Amino acid sequence: MFTLIKQFKREFVYGSYIFLTLELLVTRQFTVTPLLYGLTSLLGLLLIYSWFVTTLKAFGRKKVSKKSATLMYVNLKSRLFSYVIMPVTLWLSLALFLFFNENAYISQIIITISVVIYFLLMLRIRSSLEKLYFVDSMTRFVYDFINIFIFYMLVSVLNRVGLDDRIMVLMVFLFTILSLHHMLYAHRKMELESTLIAILFSLAVTLVTWYTRGLNIYMQPALVTSAYYLIISTWNVRFSGARKLEDYIPSIMYTLMAIILILSL
Image (cartoon, rainbow, N blue to C red; front, top):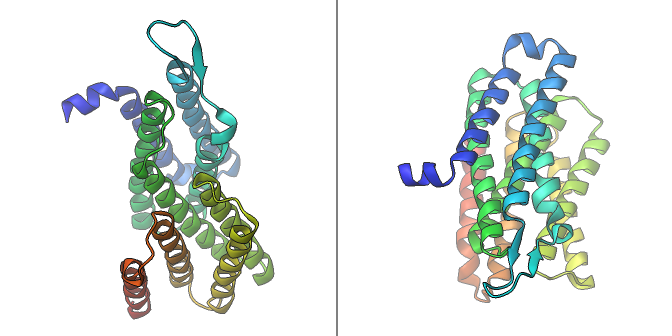
């Protein structure tokens, strides 16, 4: 444990800063002052990108070999979604969720999960840079979990702000298709057929959102996120090369178990 802290002490320090910033966001003095809340949220975003810039500067280039002075630089354009858009979207979703959420216990759970997610994200980004920008299965797992977490908070916020149902389902559709396209890009499956399938699955999530719009602010986001999880998990199984039906059973069973648990509450 101490070896891990010593190796990734910068990530632990920044994780602590993120935790303190999130705790400030749920204090009453901040939530009743939108300007102060917005400035504190901006501070958290600056902390995240301070870590990213310094990490990119330290690990964003490597020598091709020990015998050569030629440097190889990270292709930031190909990782724009993972390194830039995803952390921003996660932070904005967090800030919005904490602003509208009135349950202190749920806020603390979300904060704890978020700090762990950011720490894992920083570890995976740094590890991928140190290993010549290699992205392994664990990195994709972390990104998929972040997508699911963001999706839940997005649906929850949309449910709480009282938007028109049509606007809400449109925003859910846009985020779903964006995240599915990122999966296709990460797995190098950007083809016309794959794009059409992504649109169909996005429409399926949109339909679930529409038909569950009358449920309460806790149940609807959970059910819609379960549908989104089913798509993400089955796609991952398919991209791993699985062809047999039994390979998809765990994802389906976990989704059914989640739905039964949600409906029983």
